Structure formats: structure tokens, C-alpha cells
Amino acid sequence: MRLCVIGNSHLAALKLGWDELKAKGQAPDMEVTFFGAPSDGVRHVRLEDGRLTPKRKDIAEHFERMGGTPHIQLDDYDGFFLIGLNVSVKRILRFYKTHAWVGLKGTEGKVLVAPGFARDFLTERYGDTLMGVTASHLQGRKVLALAEPLWAEWIRAGAPETPEYGWDAAITAGDGEAIGAMFRATVAASLPPHAQFLPQPDITVAHGITTRLAYNKDASRLISGEGGGTDAAHMNGAFGQEIWPLVLPALRAM
Image (tube, rainbow, N blue to C red; front, side, top):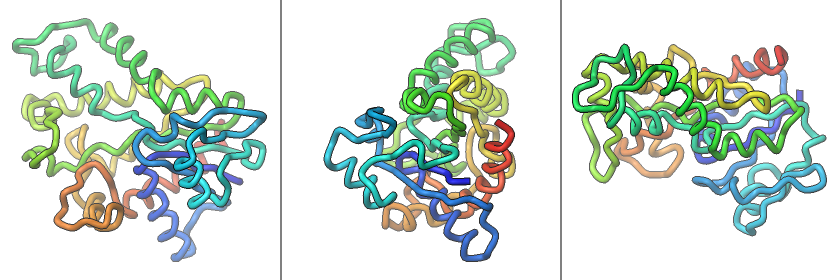
């Protein structure tokens, strides 16, 4: 299978994992080409004449540097794998700061809503993301989608100059698992018919809404070139290695 991977900076963990599996002779039977742009750079990409074309020179340069061409010719690939693209548990944690649905424990001082309302609201919000927009460019094709990784579990203790989204409050209240389940359900519901959601593997998850430390180790150095373990948002090659065995079966099942 010829697979095109499109994403933001979270694509790095997948590329690291792919390279490590290839070095060990354990990579799935796929030809993989990566196209990425930092932050929300993919929003500058447009569908034109059967190809995804960046409308900004720097994004085209990112594409060419990684994938070998400044655009993506869709018919060159049998499937597509979207990574990150603004789909994050942070969105649901922001909602949880002021709202809770029936069945959660951390409800004091919050607007209490029906679970169905929360599901519908969050599904709509996750559908209106760069992931949803990019998937719509690929309609009629095999498209798998992986959200941004849950942040590393050490973020519960807080970090300087890092926004406080409320991981510790949710976990301490006993709501981490329920919020994680709502996240998976609403993202999965937001993507069809254009894409299918691939949940973060259970083995990598801690407390329902964070990622285990082993999958964040050295990510600061490997991805940004900085030391000190200051990057809770990005994961390492070990994380990517857990993802890849799930990709080909999911695409073949479509």
C-alpha cells in the first residue's frame, strides 16, 4: 500500500517510529511518504486538479523537504493518514472547566448538561477542525485519522509558561477516564464519512487523558532539539512504534 501521511509537528513521532521499525525489519508492508507543516500550516493547502497544493511558499517548502514534492498528487496513493491537525483533548478539557455532563463527579460550580448535549456539541466542534477540513479534501478515499497525542502525565504537576488546561483537576475528581471516553467517541463521530478515527492505543494512555511517561521521554531533544524534558505535548519514536501496527489493518478494513 502506498500511504500518504499528512500532519503537523505531531507527525514527528510517527516518522521516528517508522524509521525505527524499518531499521529493525518490522515495518508494515507499506510505502510511506510524509508531508508536514508546523502548527496549523496545512490550513494553507487547497485541493486543485486532483492534488493538494500549498498556497504559501514556506508550506510548499516544508512539503518538498519531507515528501520530495511541493504538492500531493492524490492518485499517487492508496490511502491517507492524517496526524494531529488541531484535534486535541484540550478542547474537551476547556469545556469541562465550566460544564459537566450528568454522570461526572467534578460538577461543583459548573453548568450541568445532558450527556447527549455534550456529545453533540463536542462532535460539532471536532468536526470543525483542520482535521475535518483536510479529510473533506480526500472524500471517497481511504483516510485514517489520529488525534494529537494526549499530553504526558507529568503535566499534572504543571509547567512554567504552559497553559493550565485542567488535567490534574479532572483526574483528581475521578473524571479522567470518562472525559477520555467522551473525547474518543466525539472525535470518532465527527470524521465520517470522510475519515475513520484511530484512537491512541490503550497501552500508551494514563488516567484516561494523559500519555505514559515512557512515550514522552526525550521528545524535547528528538523533535525540537531542546533538552530538559519541557515538552509535554509531543511524543517519541516509541509512541510511533505503537501506532504503526494498527494502521494497515485499519486501512484494509475500510
